[in-house]
Length: 326
Image 1 (spheres, helix red, strand yellow):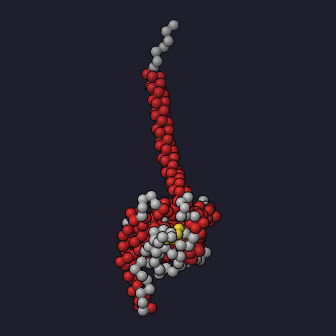
Image 2 (cartoon, one colour; image 1 turned 135 degrees about the vertical axis):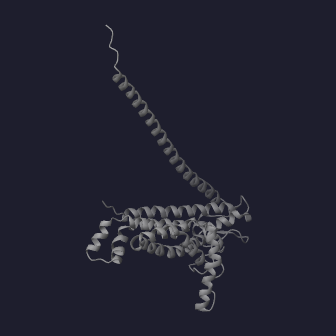
Image 3 (cartoon, one colour; image 1 turned 60 degrees about the vertical axis):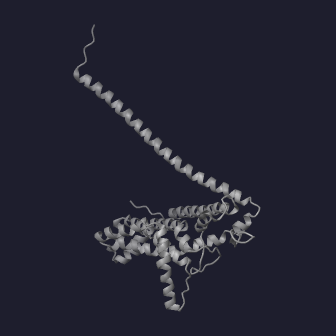
């Protein structure tokens, strides 16, 4: 007995099923390809990080093994003079002190100014004003850091000298100083603080503001006592990111802070940071495979450890102050 011939409707159904199977298989293949590419990118990023860590650790180990270097002198010494004199000293603390001195000046300027600017843009500025001011402020992030270095030398430091001469009768600040470099670093990190803090403030639910206004709060009360505490985790994230960026800044401090590595808390004095020292070494004045060259890797390892520690500390504090809203 002959089987009945398939109807056109049955043929169309079978064709649709075959097309669905093909499209599903093609979609699954594309998704596997995308997942594989994303995983490969993630592994590549992590691999680059581990390669950097291994490079710094390997070169630092070779530096510590040199006869003229001791681990205790490197970690606890207070004298850094690897290039001058017959007796060289490799105490890291003068460079650490200079780095944090410049970063502290920059943070003291950028953190309050950036937060106040973010509160204004989020709570006070009209939409048109915000749409104009925020992109203009974020343009600072695109300025090359070497320009900030020249700005510190030709504008900030002379202005500080003129102000001190007017107030005290003498230009207290020398041509290279931590304050001028720190203020330039603060201007550089200002967009980071302002932009991220403003995003965190605007992410606070509108209901919190309306509830505070319903209780009789003024705009200042709502901004300071409700919105800022509610966005504290995002604000702290912007602070830590900006400080970490300030610690790792190179060109501004290399141009404007000077090259004298010494223990000081005087922001008007000349100083040298860890990044500026590394720039000095790789300008070609030191032997390519000498102790000075290896010392730059050790300094980079210390800088990497400090920034990593600040990042971990920031994540811990963010978890403590994190707020969640429905």
